[in-house]
Image 1 (cartoon, rainbow, N blue to C red):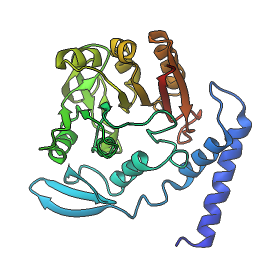
Image 2 (image 1 turned 120 degrees about the vertical axis):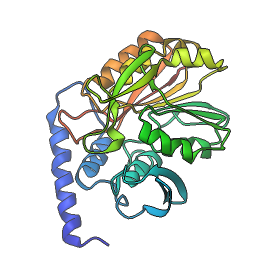
Image 3 (image 1 turned 90 degrees about the vertical axis):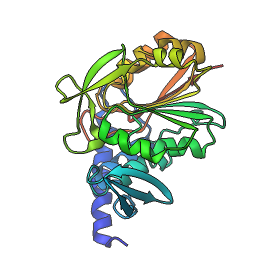
Length: 293
């Protein structure tokens, strides 16, 4: 149990952050007091269990198996920093609003039988979440090869999962990817990146695979979300999938993406969730969208 003094310091620090956000009254976005408080807590103390729950089970050649709360993934050794996988786990499995990064909110949840797109699959925890929700199939996109190798190993032999070594963008072709400066989970498509990777659009992928529908899209691709949605116009018009999209990488991304989605298909209901306070100006964590009908 944390010392009382440490808890008080976190509480006062979070309170100051909360007041700073609540009294600012400026900018593109408005937040509930609940979202402000949970955003302040996260920015000051992180996730409560994040440093204590990784269990490294054993080595298998260049890979190590990591278990968190009974959910296992395989990763290349030394690729993820200590605590990084536990943080990603909490971002995925923690419930909204105490986890402002949650991919589940209100009507936006994976349901039994859903055909799911996971854009930015990384270590594979969201794939695990979708499978536990009894989805029909997950197409997991991960263009960064060191992460792709572990993801492929984690789900090898599971015919409910297709791992795709490609990034999603607004056009098909080739791009460059940069490894994360601080954490590998921050690897992103970047023209100054060192490695070349294939890019596709979601429209082209769905057409080429002959998919009958798309029901849910989770997307966290480090700032390339706008381009990826531009490349999914037909999917959004035809199938109206539920959307859970990370928008905290750029301040204006949430508003820009909302406008793009409604331009593509006005039948969407779009809302934001969480308040990201690790950078200023503060901005939403996630955009959620679902069909009005």
